[in-house]
Length: 323
Image (cartoon, rainbow, N blue to C red; front, side, top):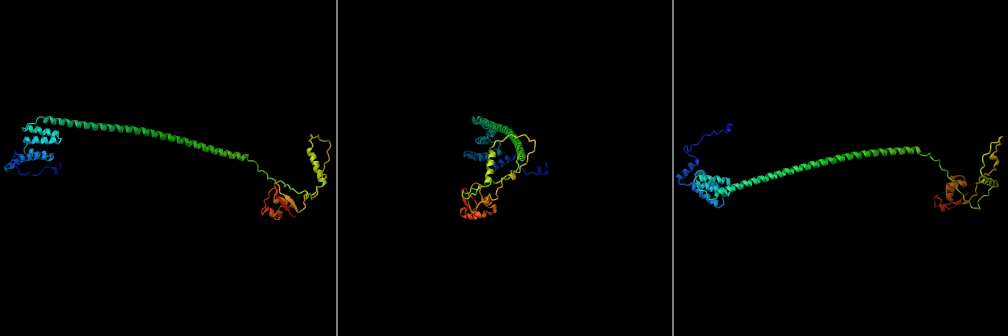
């Protein structure tokens, strides 16, 4: 123990040895004509009757302190404790009162013992309720812990399944992407190797010129004879190839044998009229009538009322062909 906590204070002058402080106080009060025990008892009794049990117990504690052998004071304090629900302390004060010479009221001890048993039973029931509540809470906590573990296991299984499904879909997507890339590459190669050669430019068909009967030029007899002979050759059956002749045959100059076609066979007397048919354009008409497609403007200018400032031709349109 430290020096600060040592009880080394000097004592005070007191009553002769053998007399305690409450006894000295009581004797002193009696010497001066004051009956402290009686005053405290009466005051405590009045307070208890008024229901002021706390102040009454304080007066009675002072009383038994001044006079520990006051049997009535112990008995009254026992009743005050019993009224406060302090059955154990009330029974202890009752025993002190009996030892001091007081007579216990009939049935009072049994009443106090019953209260003590009731209090003990209540305490046991309270402890049992607390224990049961604690056990219930522990059981609920354990059940909740089991549920949480089960939920955790389920969630972990779902997460694992989701990851597996994600990996499966990722693999399927990669396979699909690879197959798509291979397909596109194969299609490109096949298209490249199977692409046809560029087609030759189409040759525009010669426009059909419809000329009025009055304006058509006469066909020479030599050309008409050649056309008739060609028609007969086309209709004749094709004979099997003959055996090679033993002697070489003389070559025939077809150009010399064919009759000469006059150079002005395609010339048309201008001005003329032309009815537009399929494939006709101002360019083709200029080439047909003037042998120069750049002269289409002559036809255009001569037919402003029909063309209405444009160059588009319509079937059946009748055009003037100027000189």
